[in-house]
Structures are given as C-alpha cells and as structure tokens.
Amino acid sequence: MRVGVIGGGQLARMMIPAAIELGVEIRVLAETEGSSAQVAATMVGDYRDVDTVLAFARDVDVVTFDHEHVPQDVLARLVETGVAVHPGPAALAVAQDKLLMRCRLSEIGIPIPDWAEARAAGDVDAFLAEHSGVAVAKTPRGGYDGKGVRVIQSAAEIADWLALGPVLLEEKVGFIRELAQSVARRPSGQLAVYPLVESTQRDGVCAEVIAPAPKAGRTAQAAAARIATTIAEEIGVTGILAVELFETDDERILVNELAMRPHNSGHWSIEGAVTSQFEQHVRAVLDLPLGSPEARAPWTVMVNILGGPADGDLDRARAHALQQHPTAQVHLYGKSPRPGRKIGHVTAFGTELDDVAYTARAAAAAFD
Image 1 (cartoon, rainbow, N blue to C red):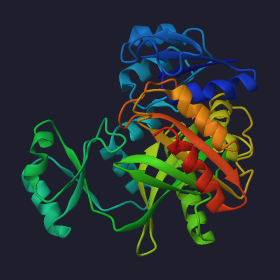
Image 2 (image 1 turned 30 degrees about the horizontal axis):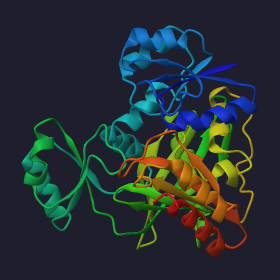
Image 3 (image 1 turned 180 degrees about the vertical axis):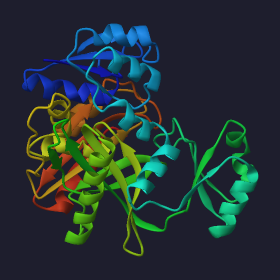
C-alpha cells in the first residue's frame, strides 16, 4: 500500500516511521529540495499545479496532507480522476477558510466565540461596539502559528487586510487555558478519541503540551470529546482531526481552530499513546482498523524546540540533552536553526507530573 503525502514538512516526516512499521510505503510531494520529509521517496513540485499533483498521485493508493493549503480546484481534479483523497475536499474547505469554518460550526451547533464577517470599517466599528471595544481579527486564509491574527481596538488596525477582502472578527475570549482534543475517523466511520490535553502557547506558537490535561474533570473531557466527534462526523473528516479549544473563566469549552491532519498538540502520542497520531492517521486514510488511543503512562509532556542553539551546533545540543536526560525522547526535524523556527520537540513520560515536566523542559533547554 502506498500513501502519498502532499507537503514535505515535519508532519510528513513523522508519518514515515509509523507507516514503515505497518508495512506501508510513504511518498511525499515536497515544495522544495531539502525538505524535512525527504527521508522518504520524494517528488519536488508545486502542490498548486494540477498536472504536478496528478502525476504524483498516479502511483499511490490514497492522497493525504502535511498541510491544508492545496487549492480546491486541484483537489477536485484528484477526485474526478478517481484518486482517494482523505480528508476530502469538502472537509478540507472548512479548515482552509476560517469564515467557512465559523459558518459550518455554527450550523452544527458547536460552541465557538461570538464572531462576524467584516468587509468594511463600519462592520468592524459595529462589532467593537458590541464587544467592549476589543476584538480578535483573523485573515480567513493562510494564518498559522500566530500569523494572520491581530487583537484590535479600531478598524484602522486592519485597514490593510480589509483592502484585500473580508476579515473574520471574534470576541476576545477570557480563557483560563488552552486545550486540544484529537480524534481519528476512518472512511467507514470508526472513531478513536485521544485524551484531552493542555497546550501552552508562546508568541502564538505551541510551546508545550501536557497529556492528559491536568485537573480536567469528566464534564470537560466529555464535552471536548463530544465536540470533536461531532465535527468529524458532521463535516466528514477522515484521518486525524485536532480541535484547539479555549476553557473559559465561566466554565465554557469553545472551539478556537481546527486542523485536519496530525497536529503539534498530538506529538506527545509518539511515545505517550498506544497508537501515535501518525500511525493512526495512516491507518485512517487507508481505512484500516484504528488503534488504541489510550495513554501508556499517567503523564506525558511534550516541549517544542524553538529556534535552536545560537551556534547552530545541533549535534552538540543533542548529545548534551541525551547525556543529561537519558529518559527524554528527542525528535529533530532535519531543519537548520533559526529564531522562532520549530526544529524539533522533546517528550518525557512517567508517573509524576513534576518530574516528567522537568525532564522534558530541561532536555529542550539544551537546545537554547
């Protein structure tokens, strides 16, 4: 069986060992030479070009994704030519456009922040007047890791965005922490729900994940699982769906963002779950029986390596991390260090949260 992954980033890279263990071949369509995932059979080309993507898909059993940016016309042509695409175009459209996402989530009764579409300064003024003079503005397409997001108090602050098209406005939610719920769904309908996790963001980028989310009661866990499974079934998501959530100071669980692929909040599962999100995604898109999403240990902590050592010496940093913290698991993505860049992550697991968190954080700090 061959799975074709469009996108050559670290998510595709981390699907490869999981696929190999299942006896599945991974092929990657990477944007550039030297991509993170070029440890697999790789074709380099433009994922926006129909002919390139059709040529890539010719020798695979299913096409899936490292990112959600493949244009709808390209996805439509794949389907027209009989290629299995998971998740499918209709589901991916919801992840590609935040305005469509908010519309669809509202239609199926999913709790989300109050929102509006702004096409002119007057729309922004009206929304601000109804929300204490502050709002979160987002570009409908292309934003990630804090990009395409601004907290605003006037229309002038997004005049450049409004000149290009509509903008999503959301209430500024008073949240006490961010959570994430992952679920896998195969085309035949089977679902597997992972433990609810807590994520910490720094400068709009995921910095740390704790699994399971500390002090998350049964009510919150059930609500998050219900939200994620409802979205997966109603929108028809196949593969891994990651739902980023706000836990508010008035005890609500609200959806922030969706990702229809393996997600940073699920990296803990490589060591921390019976079936990692990467193996689960491969199983799901091939419509194979899903594995157990249960945690292997009481606590798992994943810490992202952001930027990397100032001298660029990853070999030295890795050796130091492993020498000082032999129970930590270090994952590097084949990327050169650069300020703010995700170049890897560290995972630790065990029975005591304080010890596990210390190990993961200290090992990651070796790369500072």
